[in-house]
Length: 166
Image (cartoon, rainbow, N blue to C red; front, side, top):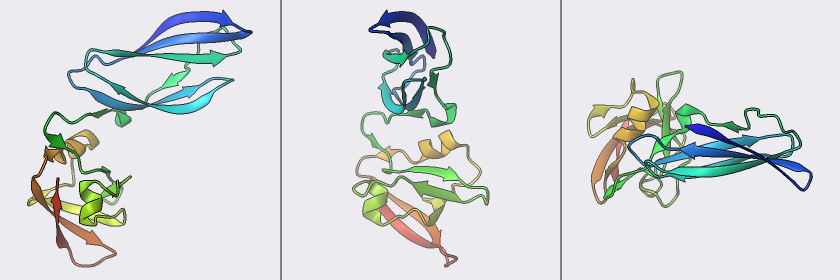
């Protein structure tokens, strides 16, 4: 939830004050796009459940406009204690393939050799296609130390298995 808290005039600029509140029941990570006539950048926010984060936006204008943009598809719950993510994000492309991207080299996918040119077909025998983005990424959360088998394809080759240790 984004709340506008007001504006102050400082040193010839207007400083618009906002609050980003997490009204959900899980801690979240969210990229927040800041745009005004004086600033344009993305700020990555971690917001605990029930908490809020203040954001200040500089502008030469006193009018309130949409300075802050958050894509609802880019709000991700943070893992609960004892759980780990794959060290990557996944999405389903228009061909129905589940693709990993932003793979951390030292994360579970990176260490197992999963790359962005691969398609993830199954995880421990469960089909990955046909899930919405949040469900798909939530399915990939596992207990730290857990071994998971992924059936993958790459470059038109026959599907093969890769073991991933979380």
